[in-house]
Length: 93
Image 1 (cartoon, rainbow, N blue to C red):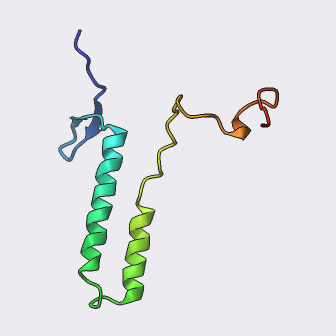
Image 2 (tube, one colour):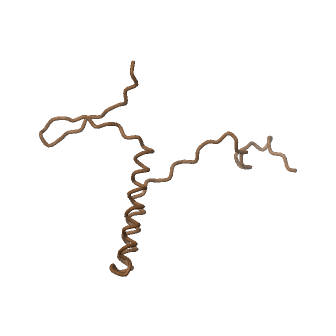
Image 3 (cartoon, rainbow, N blue to C red):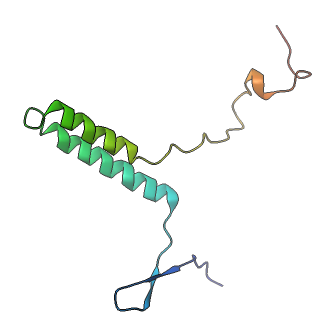
């Protein structure tokens, strides 16, 4: 049986339903980050034309639109931090 992704349905103007493909959260985050980066580059071109206050506000608005950072990946090759282990396992050298 082929691996099928879940497709949700969304209403459209004519009153029916249309399938909406599932979005990969990581890909969606990358697209948002790319778009914010493009907008920041575009704002650089308007330095000196738009007031500094307006530019600063627009940059703040862009940063507010950023998705939260993903949690750190669990890497088994890293040593645990002191607070991550039980007191019985901790040795002082």
